[in-house]
Length: 299
Ligand code: HSE
Image (cartoon, rainbow, N blue to C red):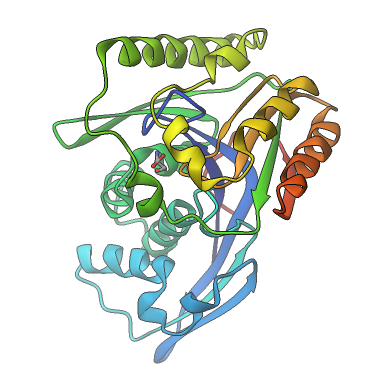
C-alpha cells in the first residue's frame, strides 16, 4: 500500500496574485494499491458528494491516470482510500492537493518512474495555476514564476512564530466565478503598489518581521472586486485587525479569509472573525493552523 499526504494551501496572501502560496498543516491523505480489477474509491473526511459518483470524475484519480498514461501503463485495477480534511471549494487548495497527492501516489506505484520536477510541471498544467500546486509540493511559502510555459519557483520558510487562522464560510465560491470579475487591464500605479506590497510581504515573512504585514497584505487589484462574493468582507477584515491580527486577506480565490497572527492569538482572532461573519448571517468553521514546512510526503 502506498500512502501519500498533500497539504492544503492558501494562495495569493493579498498582493501575490497567482504568484505566492503557503502550505498549511491540514491534509488530504491517500492510500492506494493495485487490485485485480475495477476502480474502487473509498472516502472519509470532508468531501463533496458529487465527486463520489464516478471514479472517472474524481480529480485525484484523474491525476493518477495522467501519470499512468505518461508511463504508458494501464493498471488492471486500483483500490484508493481518500481521507480529506481540506474543505472543498473554499480557497484552500483542495483541488491542488488532490492533483499533487494523485500524481505522487501514481508515480510511487509505478516505481518512481518520473522526477518530482516533472510531476510538478504536469500538476501545474492540470490545475491551471501554480500558486497552490507549488507549495503543496514544497511546503512552506512558495513563489511561483511561469516563463514561456515553464514553472520556476523558490521556497521560503516562514518564521516559526507565525500563527494562521482561516475562517471558512459555509458556502462555496467556484474559482471560475471568482476569476470572472478580474480586470482585463490595470494601471501602472496599481501594478507598482501591489508589486511593492508583494515584495515587502515576502521579505517580511522570510525575515520573521511581522510589523507591517497588514499593509503589505492589502491587495488593491482583485480583492476589492472579489469582495462582492463575501458578505461583510470589509468588516471581517477590520475586526480581525482590530483584534490584533498581523495581516488579513482572502484565501486564494475565496470565500475563506486568512489571518496571520502571533502564536497563541489564533483562537481569539478566530472568535472575532466568526462573530463578524455571524453578524452578516454566515456560519463559519474556524481553523487554527500552522504553516506546513514539508509539502507532499510519503508516510
Ligand atoms: N490564484 C488563484 C486565484 C487561486 O486567486 O484565482 C489559486 O490558484
